[in-house]
Length: 259
Ligand SMILES: CC[C@H](CNC(=O)c1ccc(S(N)(=O)=O)cc1)c1ccc2[nH]ccc2c1
Ligand SMILES: [Zn+2]
Image 1: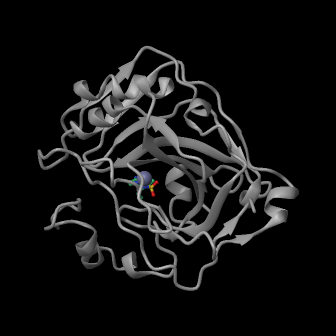
Image 2 (image 1 turned 120 degrees about the vertical axis):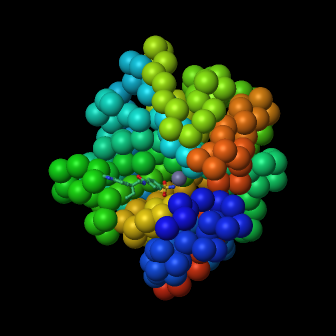
Image 3 (image 1 turned 90 degrees about the horizontal axis):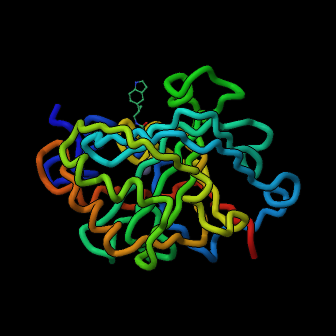
């Protein structure tokens, strides 16, 4: 099996061959049609979404061939909102981006694509014993989606963007001796978001993700975005346009926490 990727020969339009769930009922990403999203006060009212992350004392970065990923070692928890009382543990975060600022996010908002999208990946530690155990369960994972737009530099992201040059090739790993607080990667407004039931956006495309996509984008500088585009993927090409285009909404409703 030719390894999946984002080129014409192995990109999203070919994934259905090896991963038939690509045409499933709850695939991600989606285009968020803001007027069709349903305001759901109890998602907001009863228990607001809450994060309780412990800052990483060192930063473990991996170029996994299709993104740059930061492996989390501390016990960070996400709960509330659509997750109810279940506690989801932060496992890793990674990004998707374009070759240019006009594209790169996976979710779109009324057809608008952002320059990049940051994903904080969590697994349901209230119900399952590990990420690997949770990754195929319908309520196994929760991913926070944060839109990235060009602007001022994001200080907390510097530890990643400043080290992309040392993670050029696929499989490269490094540990940076500095702290990182995942809370500081979130937008200032974490009350306003869309949420829906979806999937992993890369093979194996498991339909196990409760998506929470924040309305407010976060700014990264041009240099920080350029650093991502200089990474090299598992085929030795520049790692760019590593985003899956929106999948069909099918019988799903998107909920929103704001009017
Ligand atoms: C099953 C897939 C998984 C590797 N992939 C992921 O973890 C992953 C996570 C988030 C997203 S996104 N873009 O939707 O946020 C996409 C993929 C994976 C692969 C091999 C494994 N062996 C043991 C556990 C395990 C997990
Ligand atoms: Zn992702």
